[in-house]
Amino acid sequence: MSKISEIEGAGLEGPTLNVAPSPHVSDMTFTTKRMMTDVLIALVPLVAMSVFVFRGYAVKQLVVCVVACLASEALFVSMRGKKITLTDCSAVVTGIILALSLPGTAPWYVGALASVVAMGIGKIIFGGLGMNIFNPAMVGRAFVMIAFASLMGAGAYENPAGVVDAISQATPLNAFKGSGIATPVFDLFFGFTNGSIGETSALAALIGGIFLCIRRTASWEIPAGVLSCVVVLAGLADFAAGAGGHVLLHHLFGGALLFGAFFIATDPVTSPLTPRGKFIFGVGVGALVMIIRLFSGYPEGVMFAILLMNAVTPLINRWTIPHPMGDA
Amino acid sequence: MADQPTATERFLQGILPENPVYRQLLGLCPTLAVTNGMKPAITMACSVAFVLVCANVVISLLRNLLKPHLRIVIFTLTIATFVTIADRVLAAYLYQMSKTLGPYIPLIIVNCLIICRCEVCASKQGPFVAASDALGQSLGFGLALASIAAVRELLGTGGLFGYQLLPAAWPDWVIMVLPPGAFITLGLLLGLVNWYSARKSGGSI
Image (cartoon, one colour):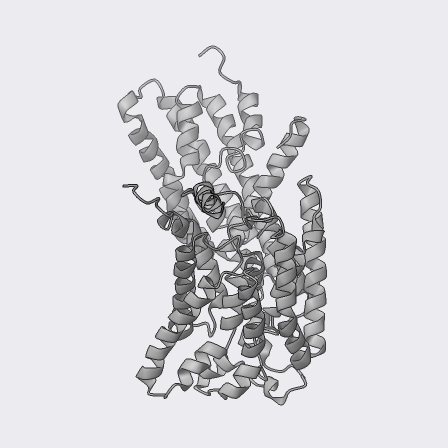
């Protein structure tokens, strides 16, 4: 019985690559809503940490982005004459991830405009959930990053009157790039530093991220690729500077790397389909992050790295189509 | 040749039904490059109008002498002559604007909009029809450029023609005067025009 069903199962799975719009439904319990609920649960530690460190600033960004994302999703979907599906929670997830990637001091219109762009230009214009090429939250953030460079750049992180003393300083990566000041790794790991409101705590990102990977909502290959590549490249930079591991840990726990690797790069819609493709995607993100951090004018490159790799995702899919055995 | 459009038809077609930017998607290089402000956009539209009208009239007068295998060369040489005149006049009288527009005035030579009009209209019809065709197309091109530039300059700097229109608290959307803003604005306006025409003709998109 079991033998026959195994053979049948193998025949059914077959060698063909399913190209229906993702997220793909492999069993009936694995719905978009379940995935998005998982992501929301996984985001709890990050949201809690951001509210703890940035207090009112974090609450303001989260409320503005979530409300604006829901409103613009409803507006644009009804403009297309489709049924409004806010209940699958994908707009909420986009809103929270977008809010967590913004600096706490950015005025309300930054989050609101980023949300409108994320849902409109990032998602609905391509045909809605599952059809977008680029991660919507990162499209929105890239738009406001270039539109309001002064509100989103280094200056935006300078003076929030927060609860933790450390956050009246520059962000760790800015300080490190600008004046060579390294933040203690302990602070980076737990998150008592300045930064975009959701990126400061490596620990919170790891807790949420590992939960996502265990639930199979996020594919572990992507963060594994990102982190292994960053370890190698930052290790080289560390070795070149003779820093005895400090530079490596600084790159690993500083900035949005862990947040991006576990929560943004793993977006099933905009990442490759096959395990091998996912690993290649992750390695590409990690390499671009390190190139931007080490050699460009920006202190941080997670957003651009993910957007650039989103653009080559169809190419990676094509490269990594599994070939059936015995096929030439 | 019996049912060629008349001068009035040619003129009206250029404005919306065959708008060079929104309908034919021609001449997109200057459309994207110089629409970060109303002033450069209007200057560009006027230069294109001058070149297009002159080239169309000259080609129309030459139309019986054109040899099929040499016609593109004649078109290009004629256009190049008028582009050089426009370029030198701008450099002499509007030096700053000439610097701002940079290579985009000389690049009118390879603007496919003008070759398209020479080929479609001027090489087949008389100088009066050709001139009204050129005027209609130029007007359509100018309206398209002005509409894109208005959106970009207003959102990007809070004003038009360099005058502040929105309240001083307006946060400038710097991205709108940068190249990405050109693509986003063109795409959205193109969608708007398509949506409007589809609604008018009663069809669906």
